[in-house]
Length: 419
DNA sequence: TCTGGGGTCCTAGGACCC
DNA sequence: TCTGGGGTCCTAGGACCC
Image (cartoon, rainbow, N blue to C red):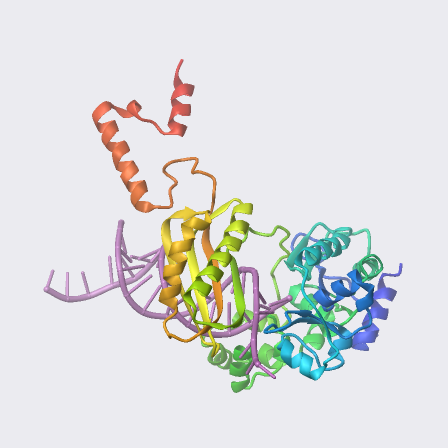
């Protein structure tokens, strides 16, 4: 069987470790724990190159031309020093011949779905984290060895979609995620359980998903620079660095990660849009019109998903990049643009404290509910109304008897009880 | 002619209720 | 008159991710 050979070959490129392979570990259910992580290479740029052959092999970037940033740069552009999220103006100064194309999100989503379809060939347990990234659990698939599955996924995506991906394979999420990002593009790194500490220990903590620049700085101030430092830190040092807690970060640094792959994507928790203007503006008419457009877009998606929202947020960004956000909740969830126009405009005035021109306005809806009319009058989000209803119910019953007014579930019960 | 647009999660204080 | 603790919601801000 080619299992060991294959893993060894792939691994030898990466870890220069010819040690004998042990069996993969088992979890409590007796299944192997084998998690893959797939991460597309320069996804937006690659999709545009795949869709338009004229862009292939060229230094190109996806993004807005004027006040935008580089959302994705082709590997040819990266060689010239173009990276995400560099201001596009900067990129064009650096490379005047850079081809800039706008994003096409319908196309990106289509490629994304196709890309993950090649993963579903091997397991139904796929956790899609973003348009170009996801985990998958191969523990239940005994038909094919995991490393071969990853190689096949990579091959199929390259052949059929003309884009490339990098992947990592390991006993848990943290390992596979880091492994997939370590050797881009077209990387494929497999980490065996006994290799975990050797793999993680030398890595700087910037590879830890969730520890951004602020956290890294604080950890560095406490002499924590690498996974090994964090893995071996004493309780005192750990608590000092994290301001209490930190144990779960330490576990991750040791390669211990119990998080399962969660297939089903929960419902969206918010819908929002923002827009940077072509030029800074303090023109109220202009700002109001833009705000209404953002409301329209957010509400449109809200309604498409059959949701309604109780809380709305308006954020303004000034020409000096400072920001203020204000939010407010209403009693009744709304799902019409008119529910939010006036409220959003009032909130914008509240947020716009400094009378300084704005470069951006953002609008977001949160606190989401199913837009269906409440099946039960009493399931109102508005507590006062709920109480008022209950009081009326109680009073009517007191006056005319319990059966005078019944709730739906009571009616069923009464009917069942009748001879 | 510096710094996008889409999100999630966490913290923390105050209000309010039990 | 003084003294609680727990829980939840609201709002503001910030870190972080792709």
